[in-house]
Image 1: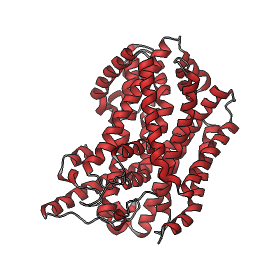
Image 2: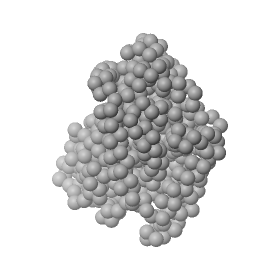
Image 3: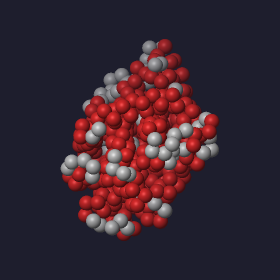
Image 4: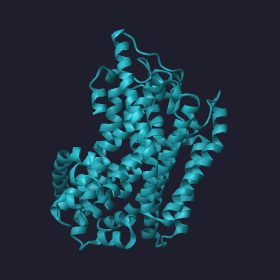
Length: 465
């Protein structure tokens, strides 16, 4: 409701960075980076695995019998709930608040910068440092949870392709490789390559989805997706607010609360990067490319992957369910590929894509992490020198937490990490919503006076990283 209110208000026409600001990214690259920075690793892991849980064990409030058509519709509508509008709305609110506060109002590059518009001096000095620290804590918990999911996906892929037994040491090696690559990338300055990596990633997303749609039961997938979309629209409000029988159910805590907590953990610090790459575009364009377009892609992806998984499982005497029960959720996507032509080729490409997806996601966040932790530098060379140990420290910490949780508790550890990061992230998100309301009121005064606030000096630099 908040973002819709902003989009249709005069604030929607305001250009991030000021009237003369020029975009630093094309619309396609902007969309691709936004998608890869946010939920890319999640849709790779859960696209085929999550519907298997819901089809085989739908909650009582759904009124569906296991493995029924109603359970299939519930599964896909639940994927829409978890992977479309809601997560991107949670990202868009703080990202928009930061973008306008920093690039148009000249507030510091930090979480506390926008919040000073609401809390005044309480959000500066030690108060501001505390806000930034809470945001970092939330991000580390959320990133560790997402890294754990990525490690599990890669371990399942290596087990499928190379016959390597999934073990704590295999997961350690994968974690070390991911952390090593994204830390090296961030400290050497090659994170500018995120534009090209994201472009390749998203094109592969589309190619894989199209292949599964054409090679699979196209009509059945689209029919199920359409029916589930209607269910999603009807149940959006009660599902979002946990009304009725949903309230307090174990299913809600295990799934919807888990996902929302993960988005909330990522959102505050990721917002700094998403706001940074939006320079030169209007608020309405920002909401289109940070909310509507990625949410539409999420709906397309989950319709195809989820629909194909349900169909294949139903027509192979439960092959995907068997993979889930015997080897875990990370094995489900590879069991799905086995039902299609070129299975080994697709699985190999998928493993590479999963690796690159997390590296690009962390590339985009390491700059924000370092910027929050350090005082402003006088030059790019000084910034890189001072940021290097900070990025190494946070990369090692994230990797250590992710490895310990996946090796000892598996998917339950991922859920625990998400919940730990989500609680403080929620507080920051609510405060950022208040910032947008305050800014809208201030901008109305500016618009009535025939002027816009001047852009901050950093806007003129027009660079990323």
